[in-house]
Figure: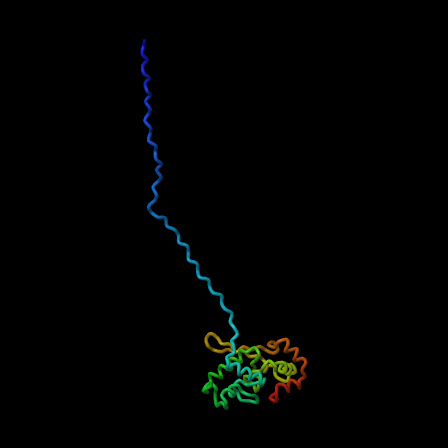
Length: 200
């Protein structure tokens, strides 16, 4: 009886070591990140210039012009003068040298800024303020030729950035509102004269 040779065990090939995936080395230098530009602060919208409010002093002299209808700024003449009314006495020389010069200046500035008052070289060709209630009478006399048109050119004083004052004129009838022209058309010349007073 022959003995079978024991089966030889097959030699297994040694296991290959699993290769670990090696990732590429990370760069040590940090990439520069561009900084976001800072947002510029939004410019504030420019405020519209507001109409100057009348001061208590100005309010008083607006009422003065409304009461009299036609007044001179500072000259003497057949109608009241704002400067002399403020001073409480006749002013000798220029009102700029009077102790109440600042009050006079503030009052005249308020009158010049008022929408209910127009300025002309009307009475004796001197600076004159006329209240709105008498604009129809003034327009009627200008239409009739009873008052020269150059005397009813509206004057507006503007304060320039340099500090100087400049006068701008608007010819008659360009400054006259439509409602005033309509009212002027209903007046006769004698009635207009009576409203404006004896200086005409």
